[in-house]
Structures are given as C-alpha cells and as structure tokens.
Amino acid sequence: MIRLIFWIVIVFAGIWLWRKFKAGVSQPQSPPGQKTLQMVRCAHCGVHLPHDRALHRGQEWYCSQAHLEQGPGPRER
Image (cartoon, rainbow, N blue to C red):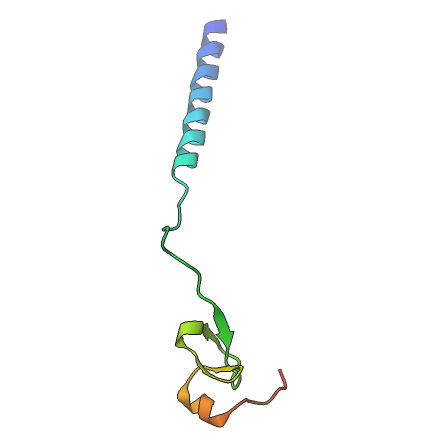
C-alpha cells in the first residue's frame, strides 16, 4: 500500500513539474522589432487613428482630408 501511494505521488509530481516547465517555455514573446504606434484623435469627429495615418494642421489632428478642410468639430463631447 505504501508503494502505491509513493508511485502516485511521484507521477503527480512529475506531471506538475512537466506542466510548469511547459508553461514557462510556451510564453508568447513579441517580436523584437515591433513597436507601438502613437494614437491621435481627430479634432472634427473624435475618431482615434495611428499617428502615421493622420493629417495635421497646427496642433490638431484629422482623420481625412474632408475633416481637415472642415476644421474642428463641436466641443460637446
């Protein structure tokens, strides 16, 4: 009976260690060259978009040429 309990403990300890090791190895890592994009808000409609796709006039950013031409929207938000 003692031998059976001993082997059950050994098997469970092995499974536990294997899962712990496997979880540590399989952590997804981000690519080293990937960077985050700065987001800006359109002054006319309030949509957020990446900085590199936005159009700007002075300190204000816009999501499209039409919104750039229309200027800032209402400040009710």
